Length: 333
Length: 263
Ligand SMILES: Cc1cc2nc3c(=O)[nH]c(=O)nc-3n(C[C@H](O)[C@H](O)[C@H](O)COP(=O)(O)OP(=O)(O)OC[C@H]3O[C@@H](n4cnc5c(N)ncnc54)[C@H](O)[C@@H]3O)c2cc1C
Ligand SMILES: Nc1ncnc2c1ncn2[C@@H]1O[C@H](COP(=O)(O)O)[C@@H](O)[C@H]1O
View 1 (cartoon, each protein chain N blue to C red):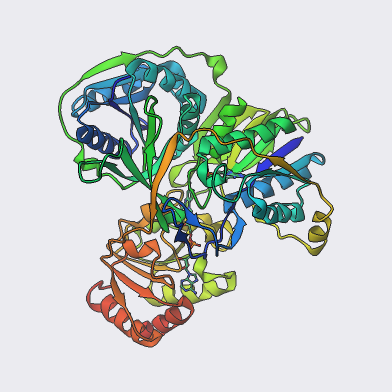
View 2: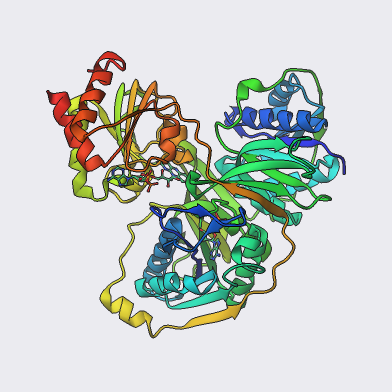
């Protein structure tokens, strides 16, 4: 066991998942603060990942592991766990850093379990204890509880084991990845087709999208604060007065009050309007990743501590049932 | 077809939460509790699977202190056949707060093993800890295949259901089908079904249904450790508008016209 950091990247189609470089930035930062080396792994079918491994080799890393096998051509949890278990045995990292993607949610907890470990998931901060913070052993990882109502700081207690960490979207900057030069090491895990117990199908989209929120200039977005389906007319009127598209958080679409295609967030649309007006939306991370690109964010929420106010430019702490009709009236003049 | 659904009891969404006196957990004294939202969808999917198959049993499972029985009763009122309560102490040694995800998953997996379930459903993530891993960890402990972020489950081969095909969510509105043999474990994403309400009849019947209590095994040594819990320090760059609704509306219109320039 050495003290190094290993970052496991993720591919998408023939290229990268956008969060791979955020994880790489987090891994490099952790390694730098601990004064240890950092390496990275890319997984897939050998020929397909060769150009990606070459790209990683131009980053400041000790090594790039190209983990290749025909059985890794398409993602399966069993395949990824088997390959990474072997890579970890070979590379012997002390820390393994992942991007907190849907794919990582699917296999990283199983990988950690196989090694008797626990994934410290969805972390937003990594802090290496310094002289001032006293004799705390090892880095401190910050993550959210109760969808952002509290912050919890974790540390890995098992000093002889591997510490697994995944980082939340947007918490580390992809453009902070340091350039350098390293060598590519091909790693061929022993894979058995019979050990892959799931048969994955191709990705598909449910239906042709009839609304394209991604090009909308003004969006009024409604969340669970609206309470009842019949209250939706309040925000529909506001949207009409503003000439805006109507969008929603997930619970509104889950309940069938608005169609899925109007959902903004990690499992819905990503939008970048000139104005995003969030009404009765708390601001959970899965929602924020879909609308952080908005030029101006206005939030109306009765809870002054709602996380949405962390990304809002203009905020109104108040009851939407009073503020929204008043605003519609004022716009109509 | 026996389906076990793990349901967790979590603080209600509007609950005001405070940090516990020891600074390492949540002060539970004034918290109102509810069923974790994705778990309600997991229960719904299980009930519909049983209805479609025309036979089977739905067992709900929860680890926690006495209070969690209200959530198990709610599940029984909605139509689950039986409940298993893995009893942990309210606070201190052996309580949920003192155990890591691996330890809680071990408690649940142990109870599932005793049931010899064909299918285990969990929510994809709990509202309080947000770990999103208990289900996947249980699958690994039980040695069964799994899929996460599942919206819908289909039994293949007619009624005997030795294989399933699930629809799971990928990022950005994409979906995927995955097939696997039973027994299996699925973590359920919200929105795949409309949730049913408990009827008066259901609530009445629930009182007669079995609620089996099993004492939780002693806690293992934690792998991770919660060092400190605190209210987040907000980096607010938000300009807050105050006043009556009409005053706030007037100020907003001004901003929309001259700063945001959308009017
Ligand atoms: C894997 C995964 C993917 C997800 N994908 C998405 C996604 O794509 N999009 C998405 O949105 N979510 C997604 N979610 C769910 C997300 O975590 C949150 O649960 C969801 O965004 C919360 O929606 P909300 O803000 O409308 O509801 P809540 O969190 O319940 O917030 C309601 C808000 O309304 C306020 N409010 C209540 N009454 C009033 C009133 N009268 N006046 C003013 N304010 C009021 C409350 O203060 C509260 O802040 C996903 C979750 C997971 C785990
Ligand atoms: N104490 C518990 N009792 C029953 N189910 C649980 C418990 N903890 C977690 N779960 C299940 O595991 C899922 C994921 O929880 P988590 O890993 O904490 O995000 C939940 O949605 C529940 O289905």
